[in-house]
Length: 133
Image 1 (tube, rainbow, N blue to C red):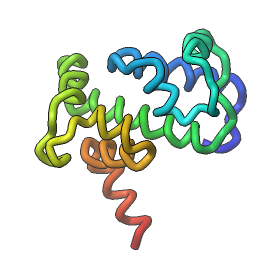
Image 2 (cartoon, rainbow, N blue to C red; image 1 turned 120 degrees about the vertical axis):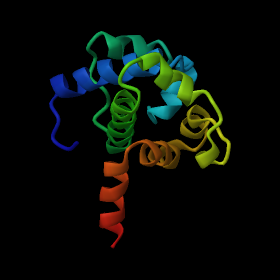
Image 3 (tube, rainbow, N blue to C red; image 1 turned 90 degrees about the horizontal axis):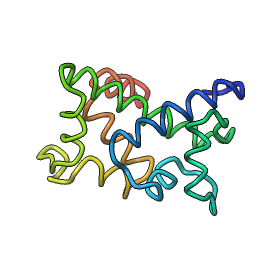
């Protein structure tokens, strides 16, 4: 996600914060999930929804990439009802050691986002395995 314009980062901010809101994630957890700078007030999330550009920070943009990838994977996994995807995020998952995907994403940071995305998106998992070879 290198070389994004302010307009690109503003659109990504709107998309990702709306997605996190749809998933019913607390504002303080949203700030942590996005790896926003220390001391970022939760009210800043509203500004991102209103077209303020996200920080031009590789850590933030990497998390946005994974969060939007998870959202896309949920849409393809549960194409008939988006609310089922939200429900899935809040239920313990046998393949994730009976942890809730939402807890993994909040508690485990970037590695948690990658774990959930890999679980949901086989094409992402395949690309990741190709990079390690």
